[in-house]
Length: 245
Image (cartoon, rainbow, N blue to C red; front, top):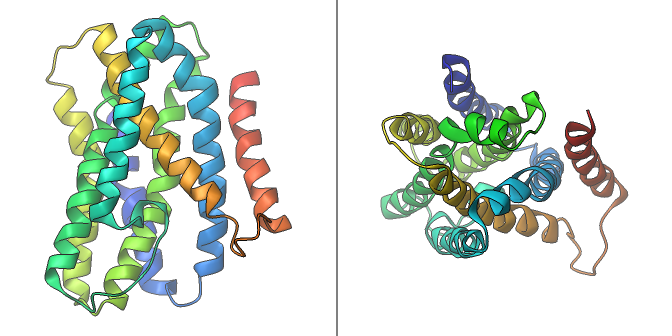
């Protein structure tokens, strides 16, 4: 991980939150489309790029780490209330305990996501994949962090929090994935342990992406609008293109 990747992890999240300060009242439809695209892309890279290498390196044990990541994400969403996949539901009306609860869940999730980024380049090269593939995990994280930051800021603003408090929460959230990656750079881990970390993130990605895609059905009648279907296909197509080229 170089300084550019750390900067991207931080400033993309800040940018997503800044958009919510400007457009939170009129951008819900655009947010849903962006989430559908990111969910499809994350699902695509998880299945086509991340899982094969993890099972090759980690063997059958990788299954347990994937399940652990999936159910850890399920537990974290009890704290974050689904903000990481775009939920903006206001029931607490500005209670500070609610903000602490949401930030705790989001921050833990973001920190855990950042841990394997430091080792992914070496892991990726060891499995003879395309050179540009080292950025696929980073791009997947960025694509769901941006709408998550938008949803976080919109939620806190609608809950009545002061803008300075909201900015503080946004900056903490933006710093967590870079902090996870930076912390991992001081750890000495084996290839199998990197595979375990990636398996954990894969489980988290599977939960987030499938939840987003299930929620793409706004009518709850097992139908998705053509606009959402188009952006879902675009996200899957981008993941396929990364594999082919």
